Length: 113
Length: 115
Image 1 (cartoon, one colour):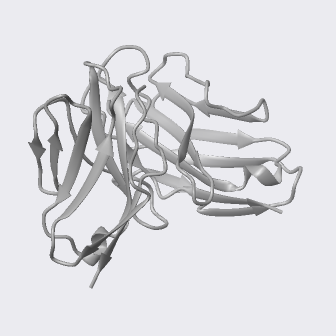
Image 2 (cartoon, rainbow over the protein chains, first blue to last red):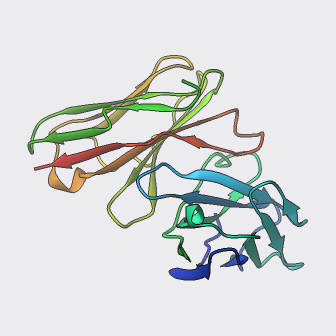
Image 3 (cartoon, rainbow over the protein chains, first blue to last red):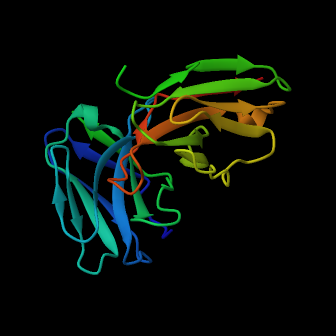
């Protein structure tokens, strides 16, 4: 699996958009980008995933660059409950090993009142 | 309940003792995963079960670790002769067959402390 790099930590003012970057410069054509988050003392929670098109759901938006070497997770109006560690993961879409999600250290997002 | 259930939520044991951790996946989920998370670290993959296929045990750190799953139901992770470095939160997740969305549903974890 391709590796990802994320900033260790970020701050965001409550009510503002939180933009979390992720670099995945060695991503392969059949690898998806996934985002999970882990709120303190809880298990990780799925947020969103995409292959090459931008995606949006009720939680967030995912913007993937045209060359797919980086992506940005956007929380449009951050709240205090969005304070968590955010993991960016690349995963093969199908076939051998596609079930494995490799979690790095993620980005610790702190939403500040 | 509707989510992944793990027990015990907390376990304190003495070095050298065996421990067993349990995971009840979401009903209908054929895939089940165990991960380990040490304090301040990311998640380490341990083992993966998919239906009746042979499990992927490639992430188990030593032969003291083993896991079983009967069909598509409960799984148990067993750690024999526990060591202090085994202290961590052990997370279980389940999902529909991986070829679908790839969304994993995690439990709250079992926090293991080895004294």
